[in-house]
Length: 240
Image (cartoon, rainbow, N blue to C red; front, side, top):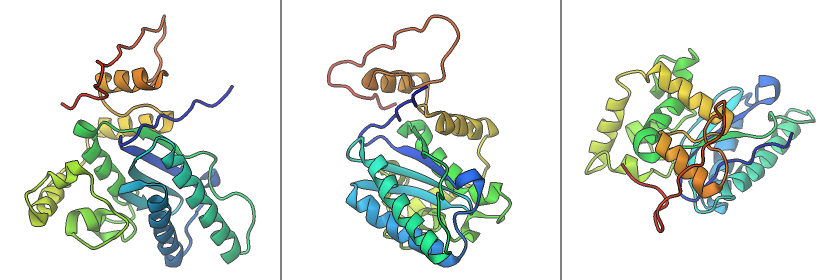
């Protein structure tokens, strides 16, 4: 059975997960994380992608990006993956694949889900029991988004910049989001959408993505499929 094409659209945030092959480690030393971040920034700039949030775990990577063109995320991940695998194979005298096939992804509805997705990404080390607070983990965007640490890799999304009138206000508002844990149901929703290559958002958002791309953007249901409504002319996505 052919693989379902990824759901990608210009300027709509995309949550990406790339795992190590057989869930094995893909980072072994601090230098590995540093090299990956440097090449991620270079490859993102070359592909006209903007990285809003990231976390590098021992055996997988989470990214939240936006791109000017629908094909750009694929180009970014291909170039980055090849460069990093060559580095790992050369450094550790190994050969063969490092990543688990294709990366997984989901388009993310901005208004209701983008900041929740950023929190999901940056809280990964806490959920994994590696640290007790996201600020303790050095290989994520939390210190940038919540504490103002300089990092040329991170390009804030407009919804993040709208959190406050100035940098201090934005940082404080963003930290406030982390006072409470994400709802477990929302965590499961993010995981299902990303692993299944579905739209992460409400029913209207999924219907709009499906209409624009001409293919299913939500898990299928038993019975005869319904046609999704087409958006009004000149309107790609409603903002609510």
